Amino acid sequence: MDSAQEELPEEVKLVSEHPQWKRAWTHAELEPLYNVSLYPDLAVFRERVRLPSALGIANQLRKYHLNNTRTRRGTAVVVVRSGRVLAVTPDDFNPAFRIRVDSVVTELQRHQDAGHVALPDTIFILNARDVPLCSLGFCLVPLFSPVKEVRGLGGSMGPDMPPHGKAYNEDLLVPLLAYPHEQLVFYPAEKKIPLGAFASDPSEPLGGESSCRAFVSRFARDSSVGGKVLKMLDARELLEQQQRAGQGGEAAAATAAPLGGAVSGMASTPPPAVPLSRYRVAVSCDVQSANPGLASLLHTNTPVLKGRSNWAEYYYRAMRAVKEALKPSAAARMAMVAEAGQRFAYTYLSLRSRVLYYEKAITEYNSLFGPGYMQATVADLPSSRPITFGDILALRMYPSSWRQGLA
Image 1 (cartoon, one colour):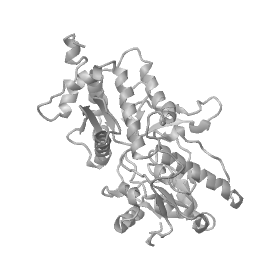
Image 2 (cartoon, one colour; image 1 turned 45 degrees about the vertical axis):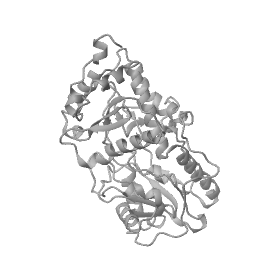
Image 3 (cartoon, rainbow, N blue to C red; image 1 turned 120 degrees about the vertical axis):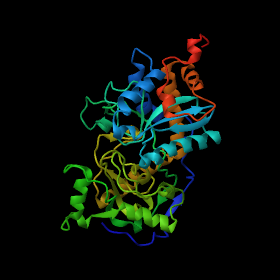
Image 4 (cartoon, rainbow, N blue to C red; image 1 turned 180 degrees about the horizontal axis):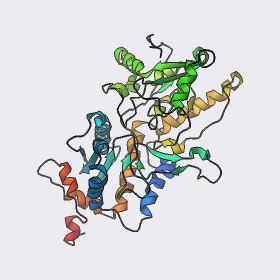
């Protein structure tokens, strides 16, 4: 891979506020995402005869999380009580996943304090790994996860497939809050390098021979064909370069975490979008799960070629794939595709929009338990000392106010 040591060009323009476009900062404006992702994810639990319970949370942790080392070390429980957000984890929680958990706590709290959201009291299990855990009928309560398997996205598997695909896990998709990207990235079209670009972490496995990343890597290394149209970039080198240069504004916030090696069950830190905006086309490949860098790539004025995959983040089912040949005559059309991607990202993928989605997910999740149930359950947690993981495992079927007939 090329090290890409050169300075980032001065022609790059970062835009925080677009004069014609509007952010989706209300639940009404986020309804298109709820309709295709949140509501279908919750529907499988609403259709069950028995309501979920606090005991179900405890039992799920015991049976399906604590008995598997990898799962346990990527599991956290998030508690919201009286507007304060905290997370508890098992003693052997993998510190590599800490960025995922801490970002949820920090961003929910920050937007709660700013008045952007009003989080209800709740207790939910957070899966910090990029591995869905809820096989069909497996989970006792909804599990908040960053990815799941959705087959037939965009109707790619025939007319009988639902328009937004068929989920093969029952995980409740929620946004990743760890890798924010707020700014649109513009690079002059006439100065773009006439190549495609693919940035990947060299420590991350290629996947199977038929995987997108393996195919793209082989293609790019074929000097007779692929090497002439596609350039491989070292994502880690790009991240370190951006950190050293202090470039990227808000977009550089995603690189604030230590750049460790590849971690089983977690995609690598996504590369910065700014260097990739210099190329005519950017390529995005899923590996062991959905590529978290797709969101930042969509902020650039470069069209994104996404490899076909069953992995999905919370916003994937709201995107529309565009099949278009990459020919010089299609330049205007590809510019329109890039602009559509930017507009989608600007509208729906800001950090505030993601936190709003989280708030809606929590509210809808609480409603599954019945009116007032979750508030009463949280009230039973210790208030005179820090909450522990053991306190969550001690949750009962009915909170004390139910047992006393007060609710």
